[in-house]
Image (tube, rainbow, N blue to C red; front, top):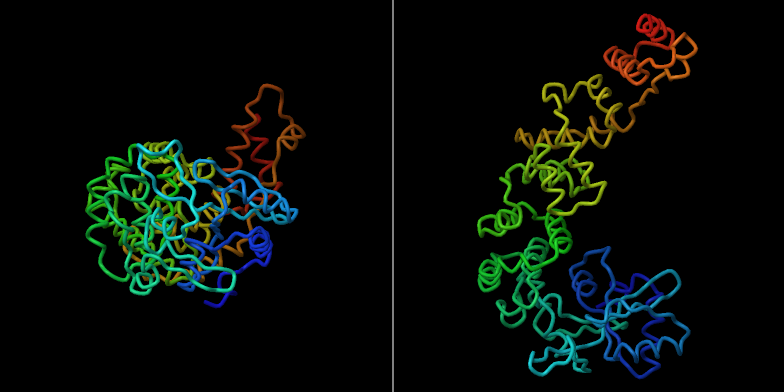
Length: 403
């Protein structure tokens, strides 16, 4: 493999030098190798070394590189190069529960380390010169679009149940065939184990599935195998998600996780609140989901720029575009061309409400009068006029309200 396909930042070569000078070996692993072989971009760099964490720290200290522990449980060390932190895992092997004093047993056997990983396509390594090391036929599986577990699928899932969702995520991205039957059986039969997985891990994986290129296909598969409903029991509409995928693809619009979540479940405010709580969405995600659930966009006016301008003033341009995409997806209008409409929205001038509380005081408002209510009433009149009422017009209406 051409090294430039995987070395996207020359700073990582300092880590290779530190490990090499110490007498160890360092390789790219997992997603960085998989994605570079598949021609994908924007991947995160993960590294593996045959040095133990203590040896890696010593090797880096000798080269003046700082290190930080990223978790003893997984033997990961962060190596600081400038403003970058490269994640390095030390090789480890599976050990029998009766034999181990800790969760990990370090090794210098790359094959043994590869056997601990989940999928064949994630167990491929590469050095800084582009030499690739493939222990479980991962490259062939990647080329053929086969997504399967290493060894016993049932055992892999039981070791880490989050691998159920990881299987579906990588199937969505890389599969070119029907699902591996052993993998699908293991995921389905062990779905109850997802109860033992942290909500945050489930949220992260589920949102990644929603954002994957074949999300509707995989969500349908999860639903048919009673995995989606096990996670989120709300009634879903996969056809609407499929429509949204087609719509954003034909109009060259970026995918968005909250928009996709909304289209899939079409929640009212109560269900939106429940989804946000169960998935532990962050404040921004929750606010967007709740706002989308509360506002009813008039389906007969989505091309009316005057109406759109009113909604933009109250909710913002991105909100309006989200509602239009949702409306079209739900009404099966997935072939609509909305590029001009969205361009008009992007270039739309949003007026500034011309009256303030100080203006009301200047025309005679007394203490104790309902300022917010008067301002709200004036603003509603201004919006209903399509923002045509000027400062003097609003002052006159305010004077009448203050009498």
